[in-house]
Length: 355
Image 1: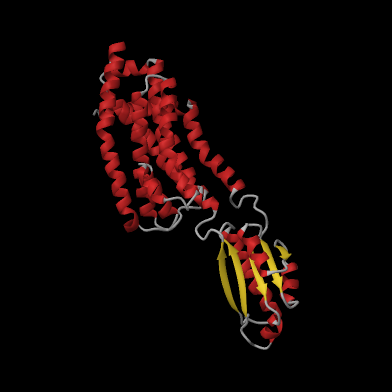
Image 2: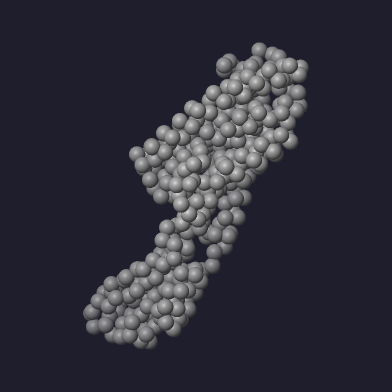
């Protein structure tokens, strides 16, 4: 491979990049996708925290909570009804105030409060409601509340839907930047005739594909980090995150070269992507529906890049925990190299023969 020629091809692509709708979409999508997900599932335009209360003894805590601005307080008659509303995500949390609660607090006793939280509710709303409830009890007693709060999680104990949508957004960013951008760039070179001009010059097919791969890899790497940042999912392990994203970008860039090199024109490329993208996107379904058998997701190659990124970014996993998965992803990357070389040679032969 001639690095100087590959660099010249890369500079040409960077110069013409702003004219490419695919490249612009790869940059815009993380913002648009995150905006949509946050509207539907997340905190953007989210309703104010919703608290349900079962008051069995006319507690002053109810009066204090109702006076708090920014919190929607609802009185519920029974504990079973309260739990049902929390499980259905009609309430973010539920509080049960037993009979004689205020008297027990004032007497210096330590009564128990039951605080039900919904697994689908926003973590920020749950925290606000818990802190505000303790403040209300403190107001009744006049000091640090001598109560034992029993927090009971209901519904999905794993992650809110907004977090489970993160793998979908990340994979979209990787696919658009890592696969679509280099693949469409290669096809456009062939359709415009510039590929012929390149390959009858000292440049070889591998030089051209190397330039396209670098562009796809760097763009996929950067836009994935942007997507994670926009979704507040950068985690606490930067080394593990950067390595996971880098390997993911490498795998998708290789797949992009295979698509672009195998397709003779845009029509063929679209047909190829429609048939294969279902397999590439399949693993994200198992994050949205965590009750499904997770071992099925491991059949698909993109699982081995999405899962490490998800575990590091969302679940704060360390490098040691994701190294086995990254090793599998690297093996897949190495296995793709011979196919990329084969496609490069085939593309060169076809273009030169048609010249």
